[in-house]
Amino acid sequence: MEYFRYELIKTCKQTGARLGRLHTPHGVIDTPCFMPVGTQATVKAMTPRDLKEVNASIILANTYHLYVRPGHELVRDAGGLHSFMGWDRPILTDSGGFQVFSLAGINKIKEDGVEFRSHVDGRKLYFTPESVMEIEQALGADIAMVFDECAPYPSDRKYTLEAMERTHRWAKRCQEVHTREDQALFGIVQGGMFRDLRIQSAKTLADMDFIGYGIGGLSVGEPKTLMYEMLEEMMPYMPQNKPRYLMGVGSPDCLLEGVVRGVDMFDCVLQTRVARNGLAFTREGKKTIRNARFERDFTPIENDCDCYACTGFTRGYIRHLIKAGEILAAQLLTMHNLRFSLKLMEDVRKAIAEDRLLDFYNELKEGGAFD
Image (tube, one colour):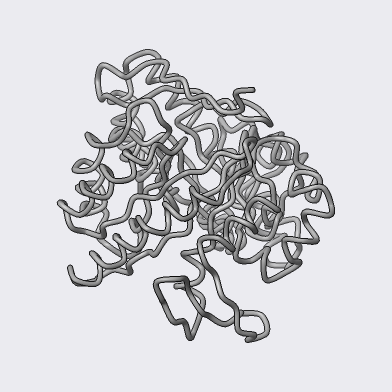
């Protein structure tokens, strides 16, 4: 049985952006796509029903956090992530590699794996490519990421090269122990901000013939122009017939810039995080709804938005909820921000199909969506 199949349907004549379709055991993902992040097996402030209403086709969960609690054995015994969290559409789990390096106060990177301490209770833990594959297969997501080493920004060439080469060796070890046929394993391209290393990593991973490819180590504090430059350098060496996933990127401008450079999949916590702080994305730019100027504003967050928050409530009411400390404020703003990003990608796909993505990009920019 063929569990996974990627179709490259068309490339935009204006930009070269890709329109595709990824088939998985839990449904089809139209690409380019944005994937909401559900770190702890839940997208914050959203129910699975809400996620379907905003038209999310795939969500993420975090291997590191689910290993720490409740434990992958419990999730496995519950029937896997889909059953555990009540979500019947595709799921992607990252490897936890980024969290090992970003959250741990103390970690020791060795050839075999990484020793680190839990951010919850301080207990000593150890991740290897083999143990990460065991965890991800127990979680049972449709797509699993290999264990990698993400070089921070800035990093010198010597360390970046060592991290990249270790990532390649770990990717091979992940491949050797990953046996679950109904779960796609994606490799991760590294190489920091060095053009030749990015190209080398793309070539090496392509030769390993993964089902798809993550692009890691970008959006880690570098200027956006440098991220775009690295994407442009590596993309000619990425397989044309496989999906490409730019990890941890989700602002409106970066989504469009990534699509133009050939990216198919994106994820980010930005949409949900800023919602909890009272900020909404719109095609006229960001709106901080908690601000006093919205107190008597009885218009929707965004006039043309079809989300539940915009069709039923006003800026003034949501500001009241924020000031009153009501949970509903975070729920409504999260719904809107996720719908904004998912609708943006729907419109991106339509523009690619009509060979007018550059025109659409310029319309968004002129309208203030990137401000």
